[in-house]
Length: 209
Image (cartoon, rainbow, N blue to C red):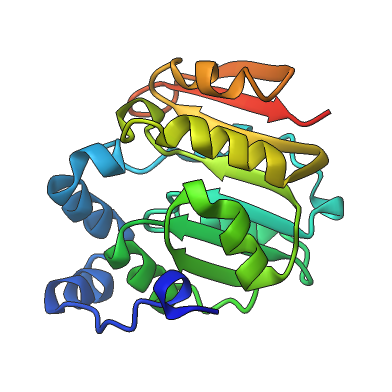
């Protein structure tokens, strides 16, 4: 796999190694929020309640490839890996090299594939790292409303094209605007709210029927 998308080849900075060793993912997440508040999108990671509800509609027994956009410090990645079959794969994509380096160091699971890149290139990335043309589920906490112009519509279109029939795009957001990006591609979008989160989050399951 190309180094440009799969590996950064960088040594973790000293402050990042200290945060990982001494205070774990919460401090790492907060430091990255202070550095890139628009990219990270929230001041604290998602709650256990949000994660459980978001993943409750996944058919784990029939999941072979799961993709996550914006994994951050692995708040969703770890629960996904706990439920993922032993022969499945989890591909996570983030534009932040510090997060990707952190995850590569912190989650030594052979099913786990952290990739430095853009979710707008998801079909190419998945093909490069897994050889597959389709995946079962995609989860995203990316702040769609603050992404650069044109990126959110492209991510929605690429995600729909990548999903197998019956698969779903799982999206948790703090603004309902993301639905307008998904609606042109997904005919069925289920919606719910998770109040036990900071801040309360909009939850969407966009199904490829």
